[in-house]
Length: 210
Image (cartoon, rainbow, N blue to C red; front, side):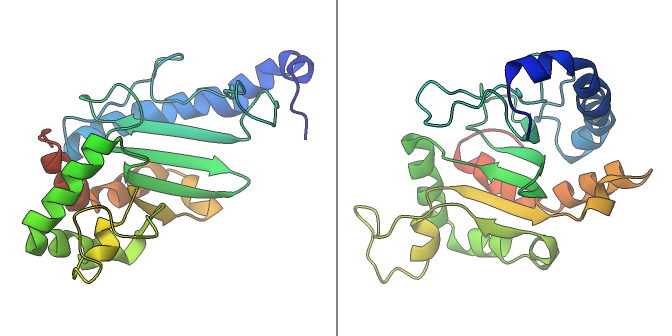
């Protein structure tokens, strides 16, 4: 794999044509479809600071100093969030797979506590969201979890597995053929729409609109 600055500089045009411009076109196509799901999520085709995530890696504290990511990442964040640590939608294409994401990855402590509180205070609403048949047909909950119950929660709480979650994310794996062709954008938007009750629950836990 060519992951060095000299090679990338010489092949910048290929990157622009084959990846960046199609990704920005996808973001533009998703904008009205995302607005139909919720008006509070941002689909920005700005080349810098928009929905297309940077190809440059943050290597300040990394043992691997390779300058570039080996995946394409697109985030549709909540307009209340300043970065990816807010409820949102995500599209990932890389050697490690093609998948969609929804929810919050590594939420800060205050947000995580609020989500736990919402789960405990509204267990029936949470179970209806978590176990919704349309949602679970294509999506599965993932992310990291604590090995022990957080302070203040009994280990035999009926929702302890959800309370121990450190991430509140759902993932939907895609096949290569699903991201190409005239129906691809509608297909992805439809998958995102199935997560609406789940993402709404997270937004409500954080007192943010959906």
